[in-house]
Structures are given as C-alpha cells and as structure tokens.
Length: 310
Image 1 (cartoon, rainbow, N blue to C red):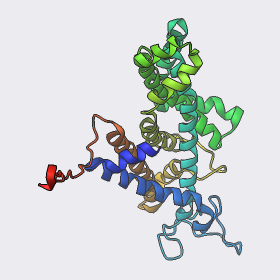
Image 2 (tube, rainbow, N blue to C red):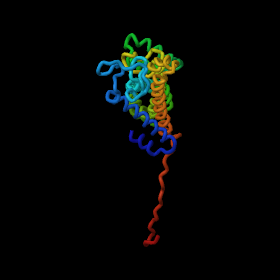
Image 3 (cartoon, one colour):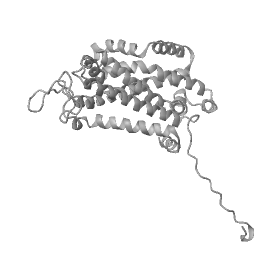
Image 4 (cartoon, rainbow, N blue to C red):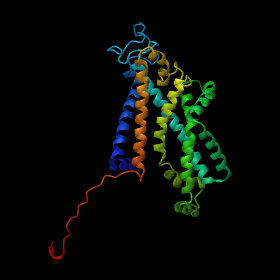
C-alpha cells in the first residue's frame, strides 16, 4: 500500500487528475451513504411526515423538498441519499466476493495446470460468454427464492457475473509467472506448492486486481440499475434503488413531470463516472508502461580537489 501511494504521488499528467477527480466524486457518494440517516430528511420508504401527514404527490423541487417528490409520495432527495448507500453496499460486496473467489481459483488453476485447469477454464469461459445483464437476471431469479430480494441477493447475482474476469486475469498472469527464475529457485529449495503460490506468486499476480475491481464496480452499478429498472433487483420494501425509481418515473416523464427521473438517473451517471475515473486513473498510474513519473531536479555539487582547489 505504501509503495502504491508513493507511485501515485510521483505520477504526473492527466492520469493523476483523473484519479483525484474520481476519488473526490466517489468520496462524496461515500459520505452520503455513511451519513444517510442524518443527511436524508426522511427514511427511504417514508411517505408521511413525523406528524402523520402524507407528503405531496409529484411536488416540484422546492425549499421543503429539494428535489421534489415522486408518484409514491416519497421525497426524492431522501431516496437519492439512501440509494447511494444501497448502491455502494451492493457494489462493494459483489466486487469483494468476486475477487475472493476468482483470485484463488485463477491462482490455483494457472499454477497446477493439467485437467483441473482445463475444466475451470471451460467453466469460466462458458460464464464469460454470456452477456452480463442476462447472467445477472438468471442468477437473480435463482437466488430470489433462497435469499430474498435484498442487498445480499443482488450482490450474489453480480458476483457470479464478475468471477470469470478475475479468474482469467489472475490465471493468465500465473501461467506466465510460474516458469520464472524465482519460482524455479523456490522449487529447488523444497518449497511446497502452497508456499510458492502464497509467498512468491500471489503478490505478483494481484497487482492488476485493484484496477479491475474499480472498473467492475462501475459496470456492476450499471447492471444493478438495469436489474432495478426491469423490476428484478432489490425489492422496494428492502432498500432504495435508483434503477427502480427511474423505472417508476417513466410514465411521469411522458406527462411532463421530469424531476422523478432526472435525479436518480443523474446519480447513476455521476457514480459510474466517478468509479470509471478511479479505475482509469489507477490503471495509468500503477501500470509502469503507461504512467508518467514526476521528474525530480538533479543538482551537481562541486567536488573538492586535492589541496583545497576547486
């Protein structure tokens, strides 16, 4: 981590500005997600005031309701804030589970080779050949009866989509690294296969995983929004979800009521853009072939000659 931060600090040019912009935008959504109970004036499924009065229906943006209300009498600003928490929960959980499964499988498959490698490559290629949205829809149907329609079910459905990507990257890197000199030296010293994978290969094959994780996070957010738009994502009674709100606002948009669709859609676009900027910035910053280092000035000092002359 310290070496990566030092590399980012020494990088100059557009890559650094992309990374900083993405981190700042993502941090804003993280603040909304973490402090949602204090930032949002209402709960995600609250359509009445504390006094028991129902909120107005399709009220335009005003001082009382900053982003207006939708057709379900919900405050849109509150839905956007709580939706940030839902989006980050699902995205972080799905990326973590995908890496937790895909990285060890790719490392094991690439190092062992043989028929286990061929079987795992065949299974992962079969999953990878399906469109991500279609695969997420299938797993969402399969998991709904077992897990329900909450955050965990959506995260697991997205996990199945992104495991093959981590597997393929780590497996290909492991195949090229297992014949390296340091691995052969470890074998000659009698190191066990598990020790070689843990101590010598793991650190070298996971360098691209953070970049893949941030790019997958942006793609996972779009897939989650698509599932919610189709009514196959998180149930509205479980959590606020931007894709569901966008789907509900279509009929209102045709009638000239624009605010229920604008702000959830804008939140989706901004968070996807932020995560994409972080991924692209990390890729150009941590990749030695792409990054541009900050040049340090070199100063030559005069050397003292014999007898004190210069």
